Amino acid sequence: MTSNPRRRSSPETARPSVFWPAAAIVVPAVGWFARIEITGGEHLPLEGPYVLVPNHYSEFDPLILAVATWRLGRAPRFMAKESLFRVPVLGALLRATGMVPVARASSAGAAKQTIEQAAALVEHDRGVIVYPEGSLTREPDLWPMRGKTGAVRVALAGGIPVIPVATWGVQRILPRYGKLSFWPPRKRVQMKFGPAVDMSEWEGKVAPAQLAAATDRAMAAVSGLLGELRGETPPAQRWNPSDHGQKETGRLES
Image 1 (spheres, rainbow, N blue to C red):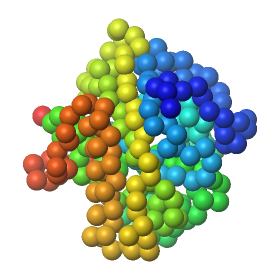
Image 2: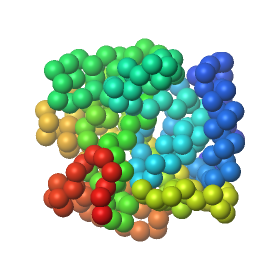
Image 3: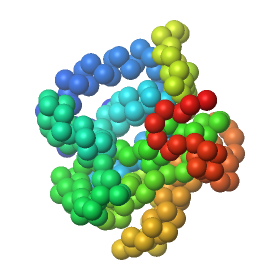
């Protein structure tokens, strides 16, 4: 696929929906900031469910990913905090667009919720974007850090393919915990999708160690794609915030 593919057509985005008026605003706005170059877009299926796992190093990269996913013919749906679904108006909007509430691993109904989420994705042929890291990476050089297991839990529960994707260049628009850069416009942002991660050896397995191993394989795929974009070799081991006295969520304090 070329680096700047035309927007593909799929049954999901061909139908009128709340995504169309949102896209009319968001796509041109993001286009002013970024010139998005996509490779490997053929790995994002035009139909059927998927779990898309990206790297996360800027508060702006969800907008980049949403625009790229839309250009490739799929509606960009994200996992969002459960608490947001209880906010008036916002909660209704999240439900109307098919966003997926995050299942808290510590809650008693997390396993049941994961199964329900996976079943809904399969039933409606929807994809979901899940940031496995859970927050902006703490790795000093912006490589992906250790991932959480939510993405693979949903994928394995529904037999859904896990698609890795990496972006690079968004830090020039909005550095990690920095200020938005308005000039120059249309900064180059590269995005590379990879083939589905092989999760076959973990089918039907939900033990923590097995989920962690499956997650690490997905993160390794994302890191490999990022290495190709950067022309560098990613670290052999993912950054573990707890090993460096850092919190895994919330704003990173220097």
